[in-house]
Length: 90
Image (cartoon, rainbow, N blue to C red; front, side, top):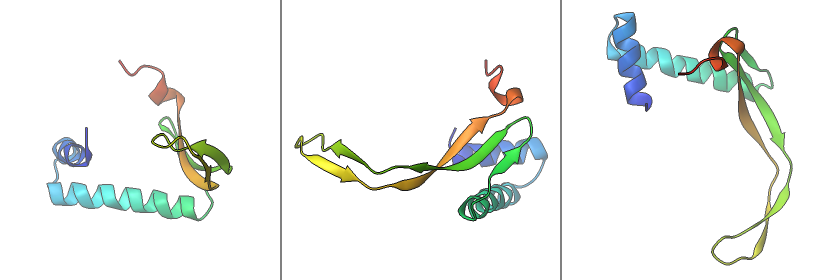
């Protein structure tokens, strides 16, 4: 499922227009992004938690040349599924 498919499904499930569903999805993603950039985490009970994880600097290899390169430290988004979401996906 891509973003367009998700917007279509949200609009159909909620009985709203695709424009309203797109606005709601963008509002959600913007709110999560702002919260994570602020250093906090976002917890949706029964679904999961978004948080920031610090990835340390490390060395790696360029697969084309085999040359060793340095990979800078960075922050990455992490999602941990909640009990209600991770239990049965089938």
